[in-house]
Length: 423
Ligand SMILES: Cc1cc2nc3c(=O)[nH]c(=O)nc-3n(C[C@H](O)[C@H](O)[C@H](O)COP(=O)(O)OP(=O)(O)OC[C@H]3O[C@@H](n4cnc5c(N)ncnc54)[C@H](O)[C@@H]3O)c2cc1C
Image (cartoon, rainbow, N blue to C red; front, side):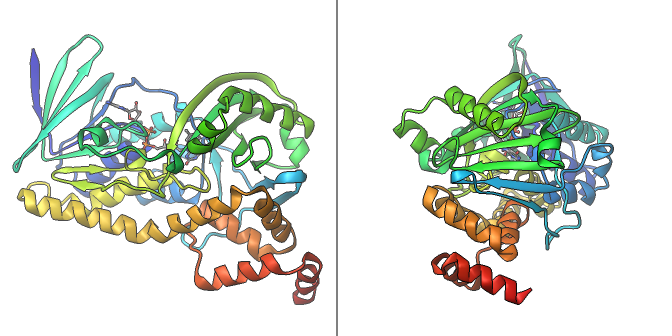
């Protein structure tokens, strides 16, 4: 028997993007009836590096929700390793567009549950353990079909459907939109380890990135969470992974060996899980008739860093901001709001994503990576810029391209001399 229920907005996917969209709608317009549907029952695990920075903190602060980060240890620096073990440790610089230059590493099992609980506090109605299967949209509304393991079905009748159902989004498929090509996607594996001496080796709580070392054309990470817990992982573009017939477990084993060769003690390797990252270098159309995509469902992952939590949460807010007053207007008015959301999102992040796609090309060449890290080890401006691409919304301007190009062709000893004299 099908049960029918009526909502203003139905959101599929209760990850950070979907939950933050739900919170944003309720904060901007408490009268709205919002449903949040997820096939999983929370707390649920998600394959991820678990790291997030200033963007997520400001998204939480927007509605006074930063208290969910209380008592979490702060990460203070990044350490980049490139070919031939060139390594640079650098403090996370003051970012221009955000208040806090801090990074946290919280297992997604916990983080996503905390954000979902914030949505529940706002009286968002949740359907956990219900899988979205299909929808029908017309001028007046959208009918959304969901079902649980016991084959209990609901039809949720809504004014707006939001697809926040991740990298393999079924909402996106139902819109007949293609998945990202292999070039615009990466595959990555995450695992947890205990490491009693990681902080000792690096002298502080640092995010360790390794480019073009354990995986040629790929990157690996070790991110410290609470106590001795370390999130480690490695990823490569899917096109290269397939071409080179790589094995994701072998890549992880290789990275564990690299970590050990740096003196890091690795104990109790567990919870290995691989997943896809759809890069923002190729985004589908986000706005449709009474339907919008946010987060991984709309390919919003930074192609350089693999960061996606911030962009998805921000997309949820931007969508709510542009549509919360139009939910009960005509279909054409609501669709104008959805289109505006897409425009605002692309205007804010388009150039940033393009800059990160170019940076990704540099990092796919071992020669260029080595050269860039050599420059960055001598030149504070370059390392600050790389870290701002990672943690803020920095763009490569013409001036920045010329400056970097100049540094790339300049002999290193001259660059060193110039930096000494300018200090
Ligand atoms: C290995 C790896 C490492 C990463 N590291 C980082 C990192 O350190 N920092 C960072 O910011 N980003 C990282 N990312 C990217 C980040 O994980 C994603 O960008 C982020 O999870 C996107 O959030 P989301 O809410 O859009 O989707 P998700 O978090 O994937 O949530 C989607 C939700 O939809 C639900 N769902 C799916 N299909 C259905 C259906 N048919 N019906 C109902 N529910 C459904 C799922 O159960 C899930 O809960 C990493 C990704 C990978 C794979």
